[in-house]
Image (cartoon, rainbow, N blue to C red; front, side, top):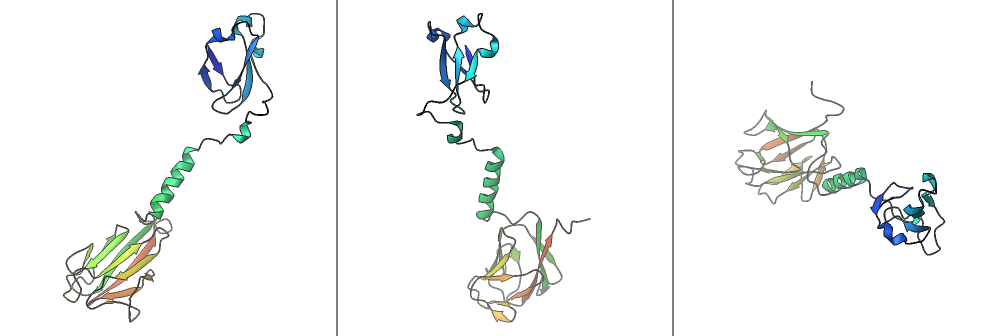
Length: 200
């Protein structure tokens, strides 16, 4: 026979022969821990259907539904996954479009969209290529963090990385429309929130 929990509608099988001559059996739902009684099917002909299962007070050593942890919802799992990805820095916020404009140097008057969370700037290696002989092969790195901030780090370059006229020696946060220089190449960081300023 199939036993149905009146509280959560969970279904599970039970061998009705185990009722024997007993009038009914007490069950505890394995899903929600609700305790209820089911009458012997042999007595179903003599009893109304509504009385075949009815809740009974739990025994002192039996947990109540409030003491049983509720199942984790899918929305919570999805939110946790997104938080983990953001914490790992796998990608910048999808609502931000971040670009780098070349103001001077061999690549002057060009703009490059930054599509990764970690961008390497170098003379002939990396994500942003300067083709500038005064720029080191791997000169600097931009880190696009999950909170939307951008940080610039010099990679022990020969001629250094300059922000606001000062050569940086540790990771430095830069803002939108702020300039920095690697060798003879000057850049401007451009950050646009695509939610507020969508493309036409």
